[in-house]
Length: 182
Ligand SMILES: Cc1cc2nc3c(=O)[nH]c(=O)nc-3n(C[C@H](O)[C@H](O)[C@H](O)COP(=O)(O)O)c2cc1C
Image (cartoon, rainbow, N blue to C red; front, top):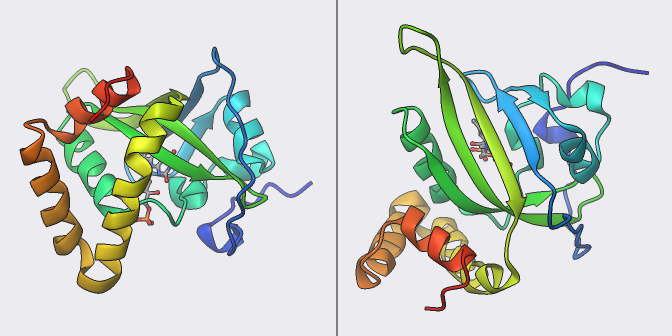
């Protein structure tokens, strides 16, 4: 059995419409180093990602990045966690077979006693279908905007949308995950 870490180039090039469902009481956990390379993941992570556990360790977390996710979502996440703030988000991930699973994700920095960031930890649970129905067309608009105008374009769209709803991204996703409508 190979123990070589995987990279994004090992991920499927063509996503499929096969949905992998996460149980109501499941938590997907992973930990990365400061560069976003996976240093720990739990069994459910391995099951959902569909790669051998031994080759996930050391891989960049973008291994499971889904092309339907806008870049701006990850920029938001990294801007917060690098500043020791928590990130909450709705994320569509891609499994080894090209299928997908939606999660409500939480990411935070792990600090040493002097307050220096030593790693990051993420815990995710199943995303509510009503939240997915709301966020999917928004992410699609953001991905489309990024294709033609880069991240500046998607950032403008997202900021305008959030301003209109008088919320930041985090408040918005927490509300819709709780079942709020827009
Ligand atoms: C602890 C932690 C967990 C992460 N979890 C995910 C995840 O589940 N899915 C994902 O696509 N990116 C996740 N990321 C973000 C990735 O590091 C990366 O920024 C993202 O996949 C976009 O990659 P790209 O810029 O190479 O396209 C996580 C980052 C950290 C620090």
